[in-house]
Amino acid sequence: MAVQIVTDTSCDLPPSLEQELEELGVVIVPFLFRFGLEECLDKSISMKEFLARTDQTWPTTSVPSSGAFVQAFRQCVEAGDEVVCITITGNHSATYSAAVLASQEFLPGQVTVVDSKTLSIAQGVLV
Figure 1: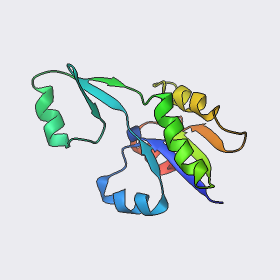
Figure 2: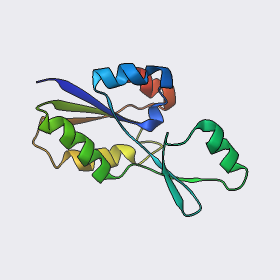
Figure 3: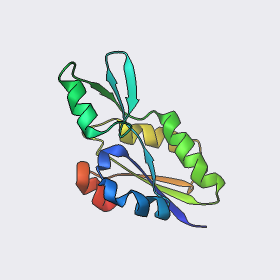
């Protein structure tokens, strides 16, 4: 049994670490953003494209759903692993609450959710 790390895209880990994160099995649950009616997963478009779109309309954002966290947690638990989920601070986002709600779908000890109490790359350092 291993411990799998789950986090959200607000951790702002650089793309240069993507291969290492994949090898370590870190699961990253994306935030959502919308340009009008078009919904995108965070990191699904390049920063250049994102910034170009902001010239026309400013996006709105949404935290990952508890269902997205359930799916990520289930993937790890079904592989026989325990989960430690490190989220953006609950002081600025409902992401922590969504992850806690999702963790209640699992047996005690299978999923532990940690409020990083940080933002951006500071969260990434914890991950």
